[in-house]
Image (cartoon, rainbow, N blue to C red):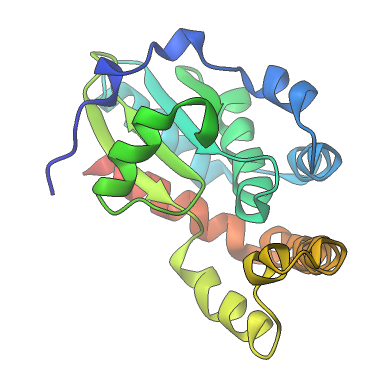
Length: 197
């Protein structure tokens, strides 16, 4: 699939840094901080990301579209932040989907309707690839977890927001060990594959 060039729509530098976004979050900021403190890269992952950065001209940009409530963002973005902390040449910026409606609409039109969407760019601003929502290995766990539970969006529409909030909070708490015990390796592997293509 050919992707639109999102740099025509946004200026990367005008987006929030991970620290600015964390300071501005209205939900899940403490979860993101905890997960960032826990996120690690293996030596192999560090080497693979460093090689990918060199392959792409010495800089890889990652722009992440998110929302404060998103559990998948709270799990995956801290690892992305850790990569930027530890791999020279990786720069990350974050934006809320509702703050960039034109980009949200373009991504949705191209099939990227769930968040986070992480768009990787090379040193020349050419898009390398995209990641959406969660690693493939997480999907069976998520599907099993939600089996028999009400959809939070339906609960919110029915104004059962306290129940929706409680369910979402429980889901996020249950996801933490999944990522700490192996799903971060899956996210990293998928991102490395994207950067090698």
